[in-house]
Image 1 (cartoon, helix red, strand yellow):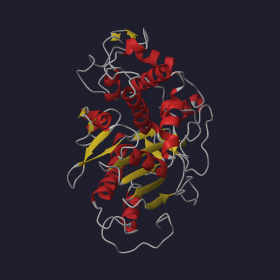
Image 2: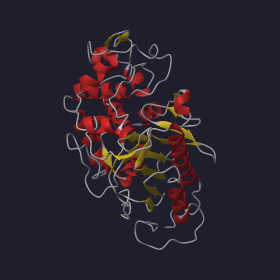
Image 3: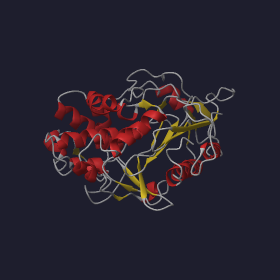
Image 4: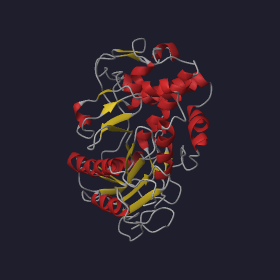
Length: 375
């Protein structure tokens, strides 16, 4: 169990959220059966509190690495949204452009109409595009399909087999497919692969040297905790090795995720006007609100209320045995990332897991007394 500050100095009895608090909160996340947890709080001074709990590999005593790699899944949507907003800042596209203007004929059929969906609606999850992403319901399906690959066009084609969830702009529904379309728009607008845009616009400027896309490599760099999925049958399966569609496939560390939110909210990536648009939120649907009580969705950024008043910004992710929750204050001066190396097909356990991790984020962001004292 790692409970010391990241610089190796001894924890003190300074007021505010301290190392011992982080350790207790990290331990509590394991209650539903989570195999391993790592959490990092980056304080106003830039110094970190780090704690881990559980094990890196089930059935062993191997500790969870303090700086381990994990799949950040939908946290990558905040990266994509930032690229799109930068392109808008540069006048290369408008958020009110229709999809059809940028990608003629791509969204069509079964009531889907790219002439009626805007870039803003894709970012905001108000496009109505139905999600039909590949996934694993059983261990057998995992072993059979873990190395399958999909192009963006194939993922969009799956969605086109379904009617929209609602008319564009009249509802809210989480749509991974919508963000796949945004990647296609970014690529066509910039004239280069969207992954390169993320690299040159975000990862390099912020020094996120431990964030990467594995591509068709199914394994993670070391060190890492293995990722597990507990299926409906109750069977726990190591699902670390698989190929994840690109936008959901980013691998990172708690330090790098904190670095991203610190940079984004600290004004290093977007103009004030674009940041305001990113933070213009709408209510989420009832299913998602179970996991984000009081949560609202902006343009690739989530607002959630703090128990101490005000709100924080985040974008969680869940993929391939890894669940990530994160949060940052309005100015990005205090950030938190929690990585859990187990996902559940049981909704009840998933909700308990989210509540415990959300509680950690809330307490770490609320109790800031003594920040900057190296506690």
